[in-house]
Length: 140
Image (cartoon, rainbow, N blue to C red):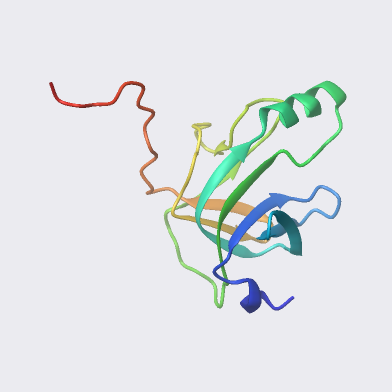
């Protein structure tokens, strides 16, 4: 696959349990079309999504389906990156409704960079996660 053609485009990435690799889809018109499979890739500014309805279907039927993914801008990895602030991330529909840091279990909503190296998924850990604001923080 010539990833140069797809580089810089909005990309959805998820683990393909059929072949064990990461599947990449890109939006063409209104549809997300498969552009390839890989075990090494980088996604800039990923945001993580879990469909709760899809997750509940997995739990109920004990049959896997694509219901969790990250979306961001596809980058190419031209050489081995030295990023000491990378931490591994994790998702399991049976134990949690969100992606999390493998070491702490804390939820991850987005990051500066998602990197798949040898089919293991990492994100930059220095990204400041957005905080949920219910009523705003306006000064009175």
